[in-house]
Length: 153
Image (tube, rainbow, N blue to C red; front, side, top):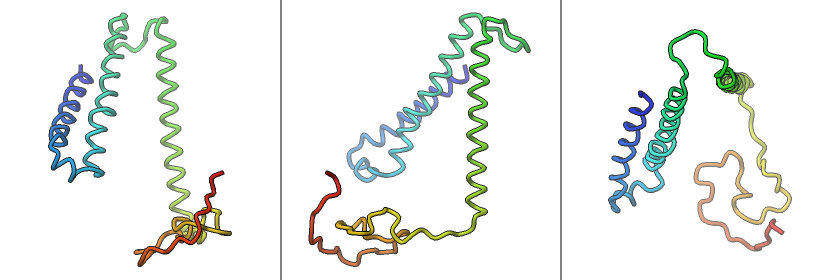
């Protein structure tokens, strides 16, 4: 029931943010901001996931799975194993994240190559001429492009 209530709450929040975006003046001001991203995630991501969890709990309960007992019937052993496997995958992902953060933070500051894009030989457009990381105000004025050779064949 809590997942269903959570879905209603999140979908309501998403709906209220959608009312704000329905105003064309505000939509222009908020376009390409994190407000639109948050609205999208409230409505589709979190709301939909809560609804799926609510449906899953409803259907499992409807099929007779008992609650609040330490041992389940053998008919649910496969579903419980699948659920356990999913939680193991989550734990492995969390551990991998912490390993990557630890390695990255303990390796010291390493500078990138001046141009890590591997087109150093003959760059033909401005985005390939920029150093990494780019300097503030990379181009004071837009450089003239002398040739339009493309790398796509």
